[in-house]
Structure formats: C-alpha cells, structure tokens
Length: 144
Length: 309
Image (cartoon, rainbow over all chains, first blue to last red; front, side):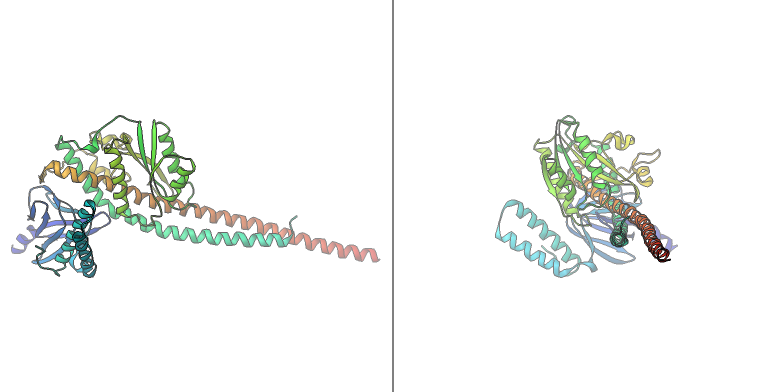
C-alpha cells in the first residue's frame, strides 16, 4: 500500500538538449529556474510551458536530489511526462568546475572592462551560465 | 600487345587505388554510424519543440516578424548545406542541382553556402554568396546553426529578402539521399499539416519516420494537452521561433552529414568493386601476354632447330 502510493507520486522527466538526452527517469519533484521565478513541479501538475533561464534544475528522486546545470531553454509539463529543452544541460557530477570558474572570471573581466553593448549582453549570459554550473556543482553559495 | 611489364605495373597501381578506396569506404562506414546516431539523438529535442510550436500556433493569433508573408519567388535566399569534401558520388552535385533548379524560378536568388563544395561551386558560377560556413568538421555544431539563423533572419527582417529556403540532403538510407528545398522563412503557421513537405513548411523531425509523422501529423484521436504558458504565449513564441528554426537548420546539417558519409561509402564501395574488376581483366591480359611470349619463344627455338637440319 505504502509502496503503491510512492509509485503513484512519480512522474517521468526527460532533460533533452539539441545533441542528446541528458536525463530520462522518474522523479518525485522538480524545481526549475523559470524566467518568472523558480517553478516547483509535482506529479499531476497541469500542462505548462515556461521559459527557463540559466540555473540549477533540481530533481528529487527516491528521496535523494539530483542537480543539473541548465542553460536557457524551456520546460514542458505534459500529463505524463515533463520535458526540459535546454541549449546545454549537465549533471552536477559532470560539471567541469575549473572550466566554469575560468569562464566566470573571463565574463567578470569583460563586464568590468565595459566594451560594446552586444559583448556586454554576451558576457552577462556567460556569467549566468558559469554561475549556474558552479551552483549546481555545489562549489558556490548563493550567487546573489 | 602491351608488354608484360607495362601490364604488371598497371595492375600494381590499380591495386594501390583499390586499397585507398577500400580504406575510405571503411572510414565512411564508421563515421556514417556515428552521424546516424547523432541524427537520432537530436530527434527528441526537435520533436518536442515542434509539438509545442504546433500547440502555440493553434492557440494564439499572435504574429511574429519572422512570419510575415511578402510574396513568393521574389527575392529568395538559399541556405545550401553541402559537404566540405568530394569523393562522395553525386552527393554534392545533387544538392546544388536542387538549389539551382529552384533558384532558376525566382526573380532574385542569393545563397548562404554551408560546406566547402557548395561554396566553391557557387563561386565558380559567380552567383551571389551572402555568407559562407566552411570546414565544419564531421560533427555539426549547434553554434553554426545559430550563426546561420542570425544572419538569415536579419536579412529577412531588414527586408533584404522575401523568403529563405533550406536546401539539404535528406537521409533516406545509406544508399539513398533525397535533396530537398524547404522553406524556412517566413515561418508558416502549420495549418495544412497533413499536406506534408510539399506545402513547403518542411518536416522538423527530419525524415518522415513513421513515429514522427504519426505524432505530429495530427492523426485521429491525438490531442495536444492544453498548456498554461508562462510568462505568456506571446513571450514563449518569441523565444521558441528562433530556437525552432535553429533546430531545423541543425537537423539539416546533421542529416546532410549522415547522407554525405552514406554517399561516400556507396561511391567508394563501387570504386573498390570496379578496381577488382579491372584487376581481373588486367590479370587475364597479363597471362595472355605472358603465354604469347612463351609460345613465341618456343616457336623460335623450334624454327631455329628445323633450320639447322
């Protein structure tokens, strides 16, 4: 009985990038970085489409938490399946911390140097992606 | 009759060529497998993208600058995806033929060349090249698709062109590639979905795989869920359209790559077989020549002995 209840409270989650399926498994809860704020998704959530910003996607699975860094994309909640479409997505343990730190340094340098406006936008996006990766990897506290 | 030495030399050179074509065939076969895997791996993204896009289009009346119709066959920009290398049978030529036959029917055609072979050919024909992306390697990068879309959508929005077509080779089987020209811009609201690729909108999920068309073709009984859009349907659409178009271009690149390896594998297989045939023929010729010279020598000896008697 208890087991059945647990089994019922799962939903399918797929994290898909343009080149591969990063994650495909059952989840109990998903917390996604929506553009309008964090989105908590539980099973039987109403169908929803939201834009995502670079951040940490947290997935609770059998009581444990899986963290993934996602860059901008979309989350699509369907009745039996939730799909995260992202430009890039990495599991916390696969994140190259060194590289993310280097990327953050680079972006910060560019931001303080103040170049053209297009570069600023790009640097800002790069900074957000790097921060998301570091946060997912648990190497950085709250970035704000 | 050629001298036996000449024939032997030719046999050796054909054997060398055969070794090369055989090696190229093996390499192409291995890369083909990887390229096919990449096409498959990219499919779920494209499919979900398309599904959300279709749902959005059926619900919102909002229009996007990228959907503005300005008349057909006037100023058309072609994104032509070819390979960087030759020795792949008719692969590149078929794509270029498709592009040029389409371009022949419009008032003003310009091209974005993706792949060295296409670029070289368009340059040779002195056609208007608006952009080029060459030396892309065996693994298509999404960044390139994004750059291409940036360029063509800017041209479109600045009213420099009225339509943008994507010309690439659909991967049917390793032996068969089908060059297609699908309209990219203006992005059509997919109302006549069932009309399929002939309507020009093209197929997001790539080749008309049974699964893909069943899912997106609006088969009876299949209903898309009623989505809530956050922040709003309009905002999602504005972000989704460029991403969707990038996915289409990227998919064209992936499929083109698979087709290129398939075509090369087939071409090199044929070349290897032809070489084998030629070696057989030359060996026969060589044996005949050898036999003829032996016979001649015996005749001379016999003739000489008879003369002494």
